Image (cartoon, rainbow, N blue to C red; front, top):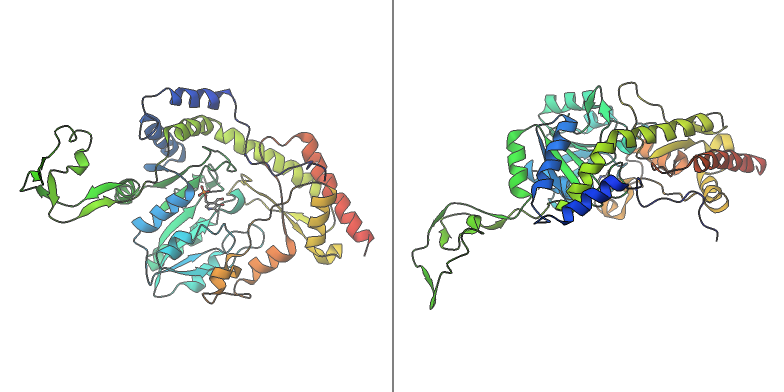
Length: 411
Ligand SMILES: Cc1ncc(COP(=O)(O)O)c(C=O)c1O
């Protein structure tokens, strides 16, 4: 089989000399963990977003775990989220015993539909977890209105949307907590990495405490300074001020929290990528506009509508296929794109409520009809990354046109 003309690249943008120099400088530091670069990255990311606190994490997954923990969500609590997301969005909630309620989506933005959220709010609802799908902001005003009226917290999963705005505010800063991903595929990357952001001082303090391993509780002087035949060692205290082994716990315990930290090397990469983030997002918008223009006139194909208040930063490029107009199912179209036109297709996301794990909990087909209809019949994604070439963009437009014509010719 020939190589793909448009592969699904494993990296969102080609790294250049600024990233390489930043990483090499980090490697020369006296420490590769918990050093100055992590803190600098946090400050710069918070300033960029316009939020009081940012905490760098090892991934968006760990940021979401922290979010669930610091909001105290657990057994018996219901959380409303979207079925059109990567399965890790609700994963921290499941592990903590929450009940997931899936609200259906808007068929064009693929974002959670606030009207469907409202219908699911009940006496046990505690939180709403939205996802800015593909890089276009969720309609946050009605979500925040529902949250305020019912006393719910709001978490924004911004894995696809670093730098995206809603009515002039960066996403991640509108709800109580925003969680970001800097995975290799994301609009800006640190290889693996993430961040939790919040304006709430108390939540930030808890996140800071729980994102790293430490001791907790009131300590008292150990009555007996010997351990068996041994004296307590002399030189450990300065390095371990938080875990003074010459003390006992009156209450509390060792090892609270977790290691969710970002390394210095990742933070160095993040600082260099942050400098480019707006330009990287702009490049994605340019590519998307070219695809939109080229695809819009093809029968049976439509493109996403950009909301006036939320410029789309196209982590994903989504188009919609109409099987009734073309006269063939979507899978036939995808097969032509992948096997004949050599475009590597990855579809995001299989509706979560239909995964075996959720079916076992009583979720099933029919629960989110818009998400189901859209995913199975209409939704298509083409590869998008900053280093797509003009020839690849032109190829994708031609490929869609040829594939539709082929399917219409064979009806
Ligand atoms: C919507 C969404 N949330 C969370 C994540 C998890 O991000 P990470 O890989 O940084 O843990 C992803 C990853 O693709 C995602 O797409």
